[in-house]
Length: 402
Image: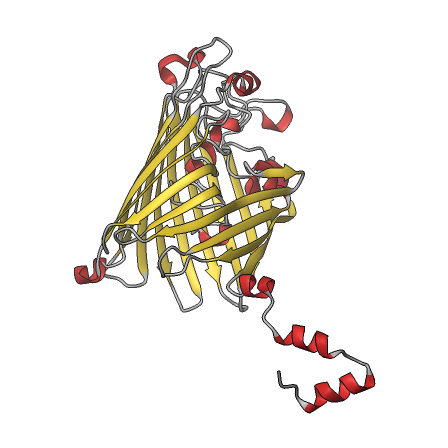
C-alpha cells in the first residue's frame, strides 16, 4: 500500500502508526452501511390567542388544545433517519422517526413523557411485477387527507376527522403495489388496540363512551386491524387535470367487548380527492371520514361518526399562499365534543383560514384564523367550559425544517 509523504513523516515521528493509517484508508463497514442514510426533521413552534375562555368546543389535535391557548408553545421536535429503498431488485431500507415535546403525548408510540416513536420500520422491495414494497414495523396510517407533521398540511390545526376518527399509526405489515402509472393499491394487517383501529385517534379520547380499561384487559391476543386502499392519479395526458388523485381506503378494527361484553367492530371508510384546476394557482381538495360501529351498546344504533372537509388553496405570489378548510362533522355519541356523555349526539361546523409566507429559507411561517361552532349541543363541564358554543382563535406558527 502506498502512503503520501505527510503520512510517512508523521509515522517517523511517532505521531501516527502505519497500522492506523492503513485502517483509516479502508472503508469501514459502519460508514458503508450509513452512507445512504439521511437525517432530517423540524422544530414546530406556535403562539395562539383565543378570543374567548379558551375552552375547546371541538376536540382537535394536541397542538391547538386548551392547554396551548393564550401563550407560546413548542409543539414538536422531530428527528428522522431514513435509508430509502433503491430502485434495484431485492432492495432494503428503513425509516425511524422520533418526536419530542407535548404533541408526543398523544401518539401511539409514546415511550415516556414528551417522547414518542412516530415511525420505525424496515422497508423491503420484492421484484415481482412492477415491484412490491413492504413496511414491517410501526408506520403511519394509510387513510387521511392530513398527517401528523403540521408543515405538510394546508393548515396548522388538524381536521376533525384526523383527530377524532382516524388512527395515528399502526404496528404490523403493509404491502404496496403500483399497478401502472394511474392505479396504486395497498393492503396491510396490524396489531389490535383498545381503540379498535390501532394507534390513537378518536377512540382513545376522554369522550370515548367505551370503558377503555375494560377493553384493554379484554382484548384478545389474536385481535387484529385490517386495512386497504386504492389510489387513482390522472396522467399527464389529461391536460390540466394531470396530478389530480382519488383515494379510497378502509380500516377495520376489532374491539373484543365493552363493560357489558358486547363486541364492537369499528370500520372507517375514507374517501379523499385532490383536484388540479385550469387556474394553475388554484387547487381544490375534499375528504370524507365515515365511521361505523364505533360506540358501546349504550349508544345503540347511534354508533356512527362522520367528518367532511373541503379544501381550497391559492398561490397568491411565489412566496405567499392562502389555504382554506371548511368542515362539517356529526356523530351519534359525542365523538367530536369534549365532555359529552354516552348517547349524546353532536354537530360541529369548522372554518379555518391560513396564510403561508416563505420569508426565510427552510422556514414555514403561518398565520391562521379558526372558528369552531357547536351546532347541536354544547361543551359541558365546570367553570368556563360550561355552555361554550364558539371557539375562535388566532395562531402564529413558525416551523424550521432541516
